[in-house]
Structure formats: structure tokens, C-alpha cells
Image (tube, rainbow, N blue to C red; front, side):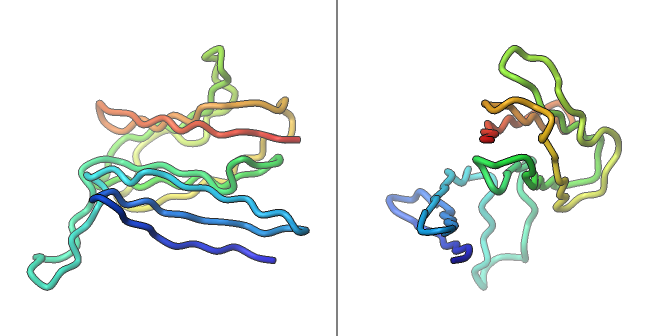
Length: 137
């Protein structure tokens, strides 16, 4: 029982992989790492550079009632983080306003919503990222 994570690379594609084992059941998740999120940590690098744009993830996903939504913004700016149902109706506004650069995490309790797919939308500056999450009850 427990959580496991690793990173796999093949043909210049990097994929984080994480898994959870509960009660003889294994759940596995993966994602495609976008090139602008990769950081050069070699000795020739001038140091760690922040990604060119924001990144968003949720764990666990699928989830039952509560999930942790984590997002990274490369520099201070105005952020909006909202959750939408598939009709486009906002069901939760998790963050809105100025935030410092770095990684931020929000716990979202969706216990009062129906099972199904939802979209988490992160707006930062003039750009946005959308993440599909699944609520299972």
C-alpha cells in the first residue's frame, strides 16, 4: 500500500508517472511534460530557470470528494483558478488575484457535486491552461 512516482523518457518525450495501491487495487496516472516546463540542470546551465508558462496538476485524479490542485507560475502576476462543469458553468472559484511566483496548492472539496468530469482552468496573464479531472463517488 502506498504512493509511488517516477519519470520515464523515450524519444525525447518525458512523462511523469505516479501510482497508488489501495486494497489490492492499483491506480496509475501519467502526463506529458511540455517542453517549456523542462529545466536544464546540467553543469553548463546558468542555474534553474523557471518555466516559460504556468503548469497545473491534480492529485489524486480521479478523486473521491477531495483533490489537491497544484499550479506553478513563473513570475508574480494575477491568477484565476476556477472549476467548471462540462456545460461551462463555474462550480468553484479556488483562487483569484495577485500571487507570487512559485508553486501553489489548493485543496478542493467537491463533496456536494455529482460524479463526472470537471475542467480546472488556470488563467495567468493573457494565457491559460485547462486540466480535466474526474470526480468518482
